[in-house]
Image (tube, rainbow, N blue to C red; front, side, top):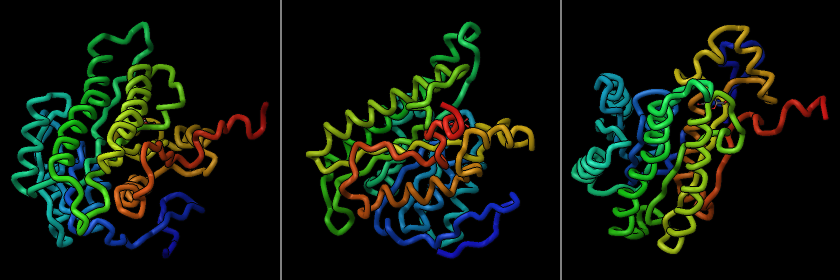
Length: 287
Ligand code: BGC
């Protein structure tokens, strides 16, 4: 690993790792991959040798996903963009058909698509509750189910991977940290945790691994208000013992490894990538 002073923040050094080719010969579908964490995961998986399907939401423009595809192709990788609202069964099924048409099969699903619609509970509408549960939880179920059908149909191909398939659920520190004003979001991520663990238990005999990555505060559009001004950034640091915000690549590197055979004996785990956010930072001086 080669480290250098590469952050805009004084005194903060971010790791610069050359991607190991851990996913050569595999195909990955990354949902919500036109921006943020999903975009970084798609690019990192391609750099690790996977052919990548870049999903983007039904109501958004094609162009951000097309840019991710172009980026991957310019680096010599294989990629396609696939439009689907992950909360819609028909669209998810059509997306998997399209991916199989293009890449024949699928080895890795990254259940990343997610959103926030925040409100104090007495102002939260049923629509806000449903929108978040539908995408963050039901969307992960629908995509996992289609991926599992394909993993079971194909089984293990030893020249490709020790496992018949891998699912990474992108959850959040809020699968364990309660979050006032974000009840729909926290409930969706708590649901993802038990969905992931129950799937892992059910599917282990089929050599299908299901795990979660739980990001803390990562610099993406979803939480711009928490990092885009110096005041907000300083406040955020009170919650992060490691004293820097996470970058999408912090998650992408872990995703490549967790999906690879290097992590073959890991199943049913929530892996927190949060700079210590879950360590009850308030207790460093209190209690
Ligand atoms: C949320 C972010 C938040 C982070 C830490 C994530 O799951 O999407 O908005 O900054 O958790 O609280």
